[in-house]
Each structure stands twice: as structure tokens, then as C-alpha cells.
Length: 176
Length: 176
DNA sequence: ATATTAAATTACCGATCGGTACGAAATGTC
DNA sequence: GACATTTCGTACCGATCGGTAATTTAATAT
Picture 1 (cartoon, rainbow over the protein chains, first blue to last red):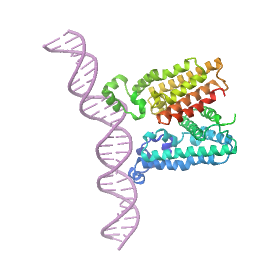
Picture 2: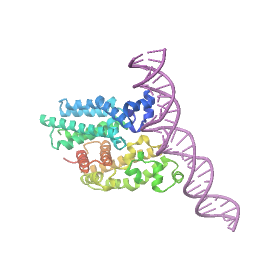
Picture 3: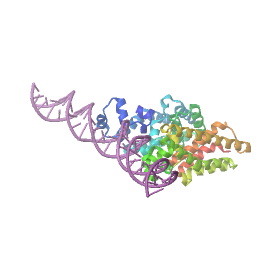
Picture 4: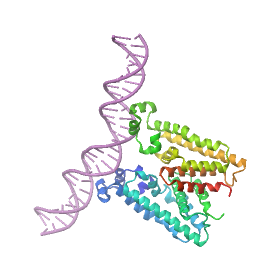
């Protein structure tokens, strides 16, 4: 997971992974079937170890402004995300993935958008989101802007610039 | 160029290109030196054949609203961009590029941001951009949002959704 | 028409990829 | 302790990569 995350799933071979992990290749194949099965397992681990944290932020009943600030800070500053997000790296190279991993990526993507939707609905009900746009497209927008910021982190862009961009992008959701 | 553009530079080998173009591999190497030289040449051709069109839109002295609409329509609807933008595909996989191509990508990126800056300055002077933000970061924002939309095109996302996202993202630049 | 040069292609190089056949070591069973 | 079974790793497979040596083809000069 660390290798896929800090570099890119497309740039790390199974040979390299076996070498770094001190595991023989047949062992890896016995445990995961093939590369697709292995990447899917890695993605599952990443989801429960990293992505779950984001979902928690969304489900915690904090203000819209507070939550957006948390998300902005997470995406543009969190040292854990220094090399970007493994999930979005996989999603960006979706066409290169095997069927199992690709399906899992799509599932997680849908889950994420749902989480953003639920968050927006909750904030609308609480009255601190103006709700001047449909929930669905706004959730997708939010999701894509976070993804953009994390992709920029992976490209080692300047943190200040990433934050500026994300701040501006998410300002349309705030009361002005 | 067509192969790199419709697929992805990382997914098309020189062997494959030679086969499709009906050119022997040594001929290609005689003409371009190595893969890096070839990709740089392709990128140059793409810049003058495709990117120049965008720069023209920006330098034409149209209204902010009109220009944004043109850009939105271009990025989310233009059939020429059906498979995304070759430049942004290269930029996304920058770490995989050779030194020549990488440098050219950075040059073009800087040129693009400059073009957006010049455009914003002109619209500020003309009075139809509120200029409530620094030119530099706003230009980067504009640039990245277009890049995001074109990347979504490459991933074959729904055109309506791409347009919605881009429309919302660029709405912060308009008079409200 | 022949000799010389330039151009282009065939056929190959070592490296690396994802994936596996097969023998060696460890474990369990009587 | 002898034998059956499962676990594991070495050493390999064919395919493909970027790149090139060597030979054939084509063009040109004499």
C-alpha cells in the first residue's frame, strides 16, 4: 500500500513490491490470485485505513463552514496526504486497472459522492447551506474539487497554491 | 499525436506507433533521437495545432462572460476534445516523461497561466471582472478548472455533469 | 554501366513485465 | 522414525518494452 500510495500503482511492479516486502512472488500470487486481486486488497485496506477518516469528518455534525475548512486543511496540508491519495491515483488510471479493482474504485467513488450528498442534506436541514443548487451536482462538485486538490498534492504543487484554489472553489458553497 | 491523444502517452509504445504509422523503428529514431525527442515533437505539434486555439480565444477581446462561456463550451462539449487534452494527459503523468518533454510541458503550462493572467488583466481594465482576487492565483484557478474538465472528458464522464461542475467553478469569477 | 554513398529495414539486444512449473523445506499423521 | 501433505521459493516462461547493429535497398556520382 505504501509503495502504491507514495508512487503510483502504474509505476510499481509486482516484482518491485515483492522485493520491498521481502515476500516471494508465488507467495503473493497464492494470497491474492493475480495483480488485480492484490490491488483490490490494497485498495480495501486503504479505504478502511484512510478514506474512512474523511467519511467521519462528513458525518460528524459540524457546521458547513467548519467542515469545509477541515476538508480544505486535510486536502491541502495534512502530511499524511503529502504524496496525494491512492484512491484518486487509481481512479485517474482507471482504464489500466483490472476488473476487480476497477469495480471497487467505482463503488468507493459512488460511496464518496453519497457521503457528500448526505452531508449537504444535513447542512441544508440545519440551515447553514443555502441549497441554491441541486444536492447531487453539488456533491459531485465538492468531491471533484477535493480530488483535484489531492491530485495536485501528488504532483507536489505548492501547498499555499493548492489551498488558494480549493478555498476559491468551495467558496461558492458558503454564505456570501 | 492521434494515438497519444486518444489513448494516453503512457499507454502507447513506440512499437505500436511505428506499426500504426507504417514507419520502421530505426526511421523514427533517426528522425527524433529517442522516445523523449519524439514525444516532445508530438507535443510541439499539438501545441500549435490545438492549444493555440485556446490562446486565441483568450486574446480575443470578448467579454468575461462570453469568454468563460466559450471556454466552458469548449472544455465540456467540443467534439475535438472527446478524448481529453493531450497536454493535460502529459502533465498528469509528468514524472513518467523524459527531460525534453517534461521541460516543454512546464513551459507550456507557464505560457497558459500567463495567457489567463493577461486575459484577466484585460478584463479588469475593461471593467467586467470584479478583480476581487489577485490575478496570479485567479489565473491558476481558471487554468486548473479547465484542466479538470478536460481530464474528466478523457475519463468519459457525462458532458452535462462536466459542464455543471465547470459552470459552478467559474461562477466565482462572474459578477453576481 | 559501374562504383560509391546514403537511406531504410530486418532482425536482434538486454531488461522487465505478469505469471507459473517444479523441486525443496517444513508440517502433520500414524 | 517413516511417510503423506502442505507450504514455500528458485528459476523459469512468453511477451513486450526502448533502443541498435548489421544488412539490404535505393539513390547518386562518376
